[in-house]
Image (cartoon, rainbow, N blue to C red; front, side, top):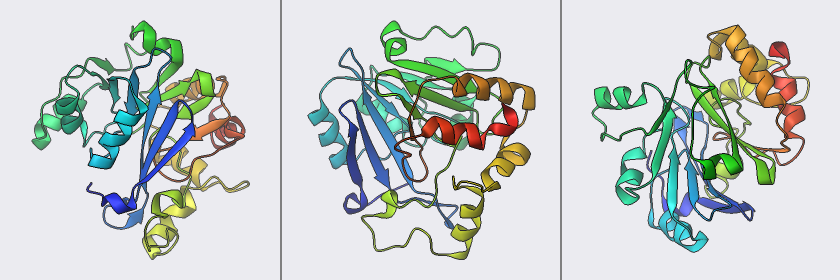
Amino acid sequence: MTTPSSSLVIRTVVPEITTFSVPFLRFGKFKFGGRSTVIKLSSGNLAIFSPIPLSSDVTSTLTSIGGSVSYIIAPDMEHHMQLGPYKTAFPTAVVIAPEGLREKRAKQGDQDVPVDFAFSKTNKNGMKLPEEFLRDFEVEFWDSHANKEITLLHKPSRTLIEADLLFNLPAREQYSNTDEDPTKGPWTKLVMYFMNTTLGHKGQQRFNWYVACKDKPSWAESARRVAAWDFDRIIPCHGDVIETDGNDVFRRLFAWHL
């Protein structure tokens, strides 16, 4: 994914969280939009969730936020394309990712990036992440998701941060610095039917039940754990930020598993 700097939208969501939002056309057809989220930990260090291309604008923003980039989170088996450049730029950063991602990248010929904490079905409940990370975050690994999702709760701001677990299309913010309408195009209209959070609409619930979920008991366990978290805001990688009532939205979309 390459993104012109003119289309990048940089936003301070709360003092501890900055988002980098960009247009992104999945498979060259679907206007998903893309988003990276940077969180400043209470320790002063930075965590980057789902990194986008490391442009000069991204670099200067990270510098202005201050603190060392100490954690790079590749939240699933798809959101990892920029791991190499970030690990090169921040060689001491700890990498958190799903089990199997390093092997997938090797098969694709991607830059080899060691994974310091690789989540799996068997270790997810016993993973010992650094104390400074756990002071600010709750973590859930959805081993039952087709993409093997890592979701975070930023406790100080009551914000759920996720990649492909929940979409909130159309991607208005992510296309706001372009001349493109994020709702236009037959393929985009099709995917919007399944990937929206409109009250009363069941498309995304059906997609999760029949497509994304690969192990219903494990999925239900993860859904119940996340539903019990105290969050109001949801920051997805695809689509607009849900600024409030996020827990209600989550419970509605995952009701079949709760």
